Structure formats: structure tokens, C-alpha cells
Image 1 (cartoon, rainbow, N blue to C red):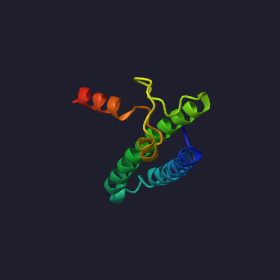
Image 2 (cartoon, helix red, strand yellow):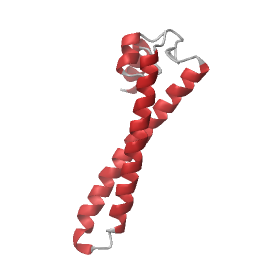
Image 3 (cartoon, helix red, strand yellow):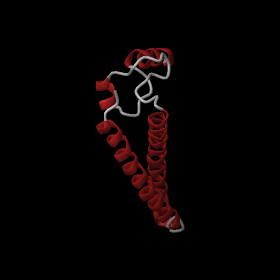
Image 4 (cartoon, one colour):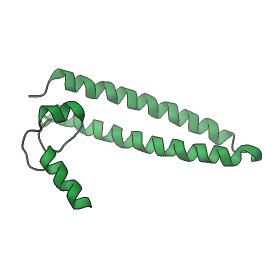
Length: 113
């Protein structure tokens, strides 16, 4: 059974991710405005590249959280999307947005290597 604390954790992390995304987008916009200064161009481009990687990571996490919230709404949260078994509560506490039980996650990892 999904506890309210896990759902609360998901919703709070989603808010944090969205705030971080907004902050990084604003910082990226600011840095892009400074790219016209030749002396700092290389450093600013490197910073922009790092920000873009962080934004990409946050967008991926945000997508995973959105999927988890959709599973909560549909009543499928906590059920492995691969095998249909219940995901262990300890796994959900550690990774509330996971959609795979540990067995299926390990199988997927093994197939990826």
C-alpha cells in the first residue's frame, strides 16, 4: 500500500526540480547574454554546457516524477510496469518515482550491458 508520505515526497521533489529548472534556465539566459564579450566567451560557453547538462538531468527527473504522479492518479503506483508485481516499500521510499521492482530493474540493467 502506498503511503501518503511517499506521495508527499514525490510532490515535494517535483516542486524542487521545477524550481531548479527555472533557476538554471534564468542563469543560462543571463550567460547567453554575456557571450558577446570575447574575453570571457570560452569560460561562459563551458558554463553554459554544464548548465545544459544539469537542465537535461532535471528534465529527465521531472519526467519520471510526472509519470509517477500519473501512476498515483491511475491507481497503478507501486506496481511494477514490467511484471505487475508490487514494488517493495523500501524501494519506493528510496526511489519513489521508480516504475520497476528490483528484479525487473536488475534484468533491465543486465540487458543494457
